[in-house]
Image 1 (tube, rainbow, N blue to C red):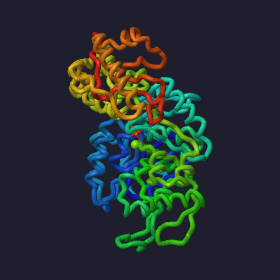
Image 2 (tube, rainbow, N blue to C red):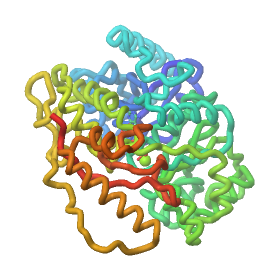
Image 3 (cartoon, protein in one colour):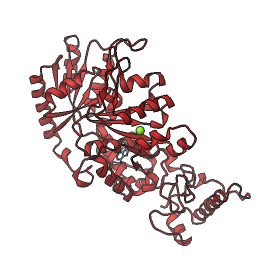
Image 4 (cartoon, rainbow, N blue to C red):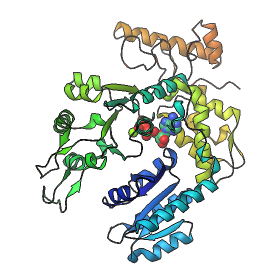
Length: 479
Ligand SMILES: Nc1ncnc2c1ncn2[C@@H]1O[C@H](COP(=O)(O)OP(=O)(O)O)[C@@H](O)[C@H]1O
Ligand SMILES: [Mg+2]
């Protein structure tokens, strides 16, 4: 079934198209701006429908969004009412695939969509390659083959078709949202809606209405009735991101919905069954929040039937070249640049950096490098300064008497030993590792964001990895 991105401010359009054309196309409702990046990177939706409606305040925003989609190579069909016909024609002149009058004739739109998909397949015959496939041939759109990522793929496959709640934890930028989409895409709900909600981004006063929907007049300013995210997700997946940001009040409301598997819109007594599958994510340590009384324990148990940890990028440095090349290909195309590749040194520098902002930071750095490059090759010089900063930025190792708990003292001592050893070996981490007799198991101990010790994630616990101040600790390059 073909996935079609659907950009519209009109919430009634998705159910309409889905019920009329859902046996042939799977529509992915997206918000105008925020959904674009996502669509380009994660969803294999080279065809999209964009709705230009006169009644919407910000037609210009929609037009800009349309231009960005067209520029990025999306095969775009514009839906427009008569008031926006001129704009729709202009868009077709500047590269949109076609224009369909609003309200759409289903027959006309079906034909146009078929043609768009055909054109798109002809233009990108390799688009259906296995490049981003995970195990079992399922498209997870996630790049990286490290052991840590293989484990993530395995878990995704394991949870995809069971309806248990999944909690994805991990630092910001590690790919939590991508994992949640992969879970959705790998399961039987793949053709149903996927609705992502950034809980932290919605004001406390609005979140209830946004989640549960509301009836007309339910609160001051609620002009019409509206379905909330829980209803929009229908029998698809609702991804509640940054769940740790929910207020205690909303936590109770959500708990009740999860327990009773039904909810009602604000201002209504009608109970609506919860059909969506729920996936949660947070960069916070919910265990700690529960201990501090900031997150309800009962809710924590409800949402974390299965847990998936998105590993930080520094713990899977072997994935860095692959992910960097993935972004390089992705953005050279959308920046209309010629074919580019990384010099071996540039890749080495990328591999050595500690990536405190994880994959999101890598994505950003690759975009900058593409803009800075001139020829066919991205050299070290095209990378931002912070990535190539050298030995000069190693922290001084002070000789002060250690203080704090025994664990703390031990950790500080290990950091000092490692910094000194890397310095003594002119930044050669492999040599340091060898000479210091440290195990060469998963990673060299003094990789940027170095670790000594054997915990994989370094979160709490006496066995925590020792990180040499991520981002600040740099060993000099091996040339
Ligand atoms: N394994 C991966 N392969 C390709 N892109 C990735 C990968 N992990 C993350 N990304 C990209 O990095 C960015 C941040 O990912 P996201 O899922 O939003 O992270 P998080 O939700 O953990 O903050 C997104 O643009 C996403 O597409
Ligand atoms: Mg996120």
